[in-house]
Length: 612
Ligand code: G6P
Image 1 (tube, rainbow, N blue to C red):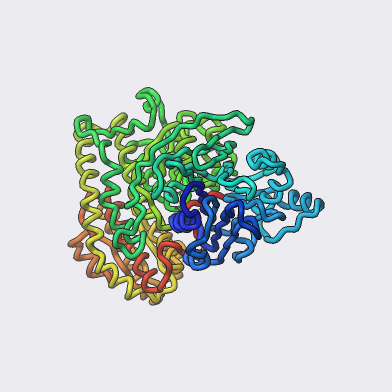
Image 2: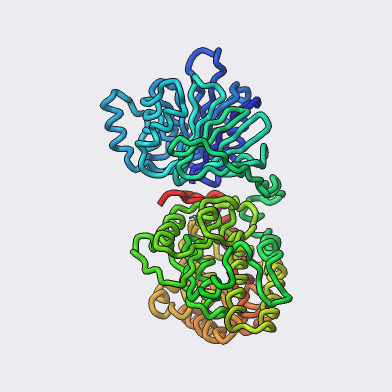
């Protein structure tokens, strides 16, 4: 949600900023801009400011190729306050034009601050909450940008990741964090500051993750981090494991397509080193819980948003059916304000690809405040949720760039299968059953590969139905959350209305929607729920509704009832979420392509939503 990048060093800054913003575009893409310090001797406006509505490509066109300057900041925006236009785009300048700031987050008391500053004679140019920060820093500035930033922060209420420069302090960038991520990139004679490591991966893998309340002041050869009480800290430098290739499209037409087809590998990574065949269990050292603590757990709660919530819904069904632990998954945005009862001996899992989703983070803090342990299931190493949780499981999907989550979802599922096995083996599951479970789990990457091999069939079916305005996605049991996920994917990237529903529930209302223009996509389980699902399919057919079925290969009966059939590799019913979700991801992808949508950056969305 909004991306920040800053650079100070010997190289031409404008190129590095535009290239960094391109890498961050998935965080927000309604407008973008850069502010570059002029070399001291230059006359005219002290800071070069270039802002453009639209994607980074528009900004790139507007930035002169030979723009001089070696220190600057950039921003890609996902609007919260103020419409999308050039003026509201970041960076924002103070009245003198000497201070430029970029901001992620929301300043909740900006109206009061604006009124105060206007009384002092400040003229505001934009409708944003962020501009107030530039003027506030200017108000406090007395020759030292770091001090002015610190003085200003005392007045800000809300969330922020900020980067700023001052024309009179060449080479210096000051950044501050409270609720919106900021990472320092430590280079060789150059420093970077960004909201996300992907913006700096081309330049350095040595990073420092800022904590809330910390301020960084950097020059090309040095940086200083201090806390809210002005104590200078000695932060740890981490090494980012991601390779640059992982954030390239590598021959695919878009990131989403690449990430869908990466799933056999990303799932294998999530499982790697964690399957313990000797004991028929899983090894999840990152949980950081003793055997005694694990044994004491009586119920599991999941908090998450969006696709991660769907993974949590599957995870909770597994906890119940495999590990016999009561489990529920809740939307983080609901839980936080509900005054939740936190039962003793519960463990909470905060599930988040980015590890930065504000709803999930705040819900997690609420639960921690009430004394319960929260573990993280995250993809991004060093993210806020990962750092603030007591322990957890990294899913190791590698960077996920497309806004619609795909490979992170299946890796989150893999983590839940490992967790369910771990708990099951501590209770009712035998060694033999554990080994059998692991044998099936080990096959999952191949099963997913097999499901993805249906690409051409799925593309043809997507083409056939691309005119439809509404879809129903239907599943039962473990496949109900997969139906929700399929519907969400379609909504997100094609803007076509889709509803995910439990197939047994359609007769209680949604069947009224069925018509020849409303296709129903069924996920057919291969256990005792198969026949019931087939009955539901017939109910739709009897009312003239087209039926698309995803079912095991060789299911002749389903093939004969459905108008269109997507066969997937046969597996045990417990593992069907893995074979069913890739076709749904591809279905959404091909419909979006047919409709000419921007698959990687769908309208109105952001990948990492750091505001509530
Ligand atoms: C946003 C994204 C979704 C994502 C959700 C949760 O809404 O657009 O794709 O599922 O956030 O994100 P998280 O990073 O917490 O998994």
